Length: 68
Image (cartoon, rainbow, N blue to C red; front, side, top):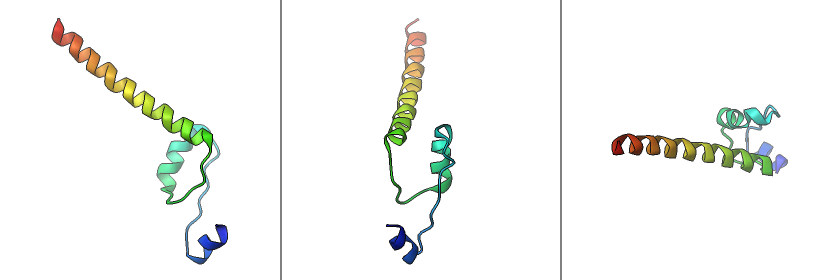
């Protein structure tokens, strides 16, 4: 894959290696292809869960205020 990438002029980027910066690294590098690993999917799942919790907590607050 590396050889193919070089022949076709693909850019190669590397993450900082810090899992706390994984999302920032992906946003900076904007990869088209990348090898993945379980920690990547765990981080994505964590962000999705946090987003869902924020949305539901906001909705529940609004519903509680509307009921009172």
